[in-house]
Image 1 (tube, rainbow, N blue to C red):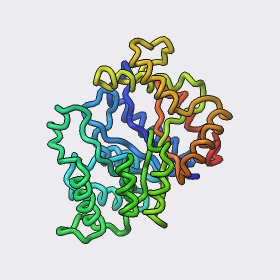
Image 2: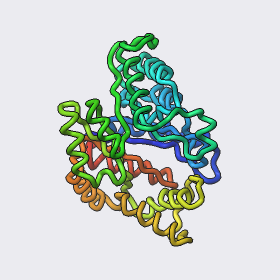
Image 3: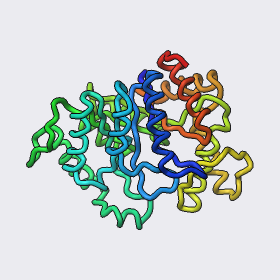
Image 4: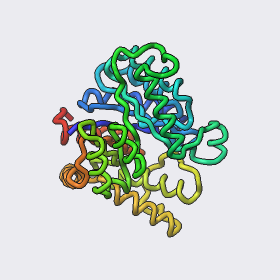
Length: 312
């Protein structure tokens, strides 16, 4: 079972955004020492709780600070970018760090309408996304109308970030897929993906997993509740079990906590066994974060010890 990390460069109350980016690079160094397979970064625009708006720039920093771990995007949102530019950015990273770069592609638009307007985002309907993805792949494999430079010496692995419709497309195209959330409960959709993708099928399950006190999951759950009810995804704050205000916020928090695997090593091991059995995951992409950086580092180390046998 391959174990990987997705770090979204979560900001923390009282810290500058730049601190979140430095924390990301530090976490990547630790992940490499612990034996994690991949370290991915995210794309979010104008979100107070996330400092990472340019995955290729952050990927370059992470790859330069490490030496072996694979570095990728979870993901680059294709509607926000011209396919040729994405291909050129990835080709440059692959040329500078051969054999270590992954490309995860998603289709989510900006979080709010002003952000979408500022991005000049292209259409994100099925047909537009499929066309953009086909164009991107043509530049990566050298069959496009122009040649992306530098030319790739070897293929960069391409992953599709997917919900239900994305699973269907990934299966049709024979692409590895990253799935999380409610789609993980739809075993029929996961099995259909595998059948369509054939030998190319590779299911990366993204989940929030924290080894330690269960309260480690509270800061992220509260931020999600705030986002769903105020429209703004905030920086992380210290855990507060009493931060349960409106009925809707309580519901969102309870739902988020129910989807998170958190607790001591035995509890997490049991939860992981159930998750893998339920989904047939080929790889786990851990996307968790919490307020306490030391506790987060300890969680990453304990999880590595459970799944890859790395020293903690």
